[in-house]
Length: 89
Image 1 (cartoon, rainbow, N blue to C red):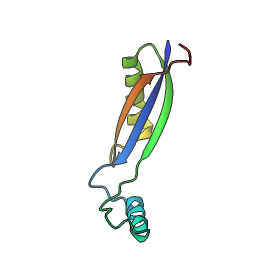
Image 2 (tube, rainbow, N blue to C red):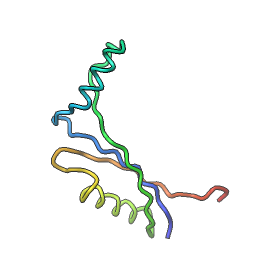
Image 3 (cartoon, rainbow, N blue to C red):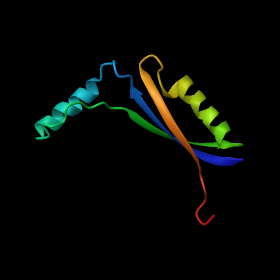
Image 4 (cartoon, rainbow, N blue to C red):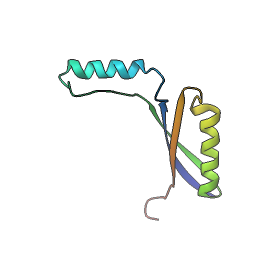
């Protein structure tokens, strides 16, 4: 068994309204960043999973995303999984 770090990005689907993104865009405009056209706000989740292999860890992470971490109606997700190595290994 090994530990794997999953970095999961969850974003609203392109056609879903993003009021937080609009507020950030407007704030950036008020700070003088007039070139900002669009802002979308999402979330980044990091999960460490113990699994037999990288494919098994990916299967587990996908299941987590589908069941809890992302709302499939309005959000999409992507992730990458890498083995955690102890320092000096």
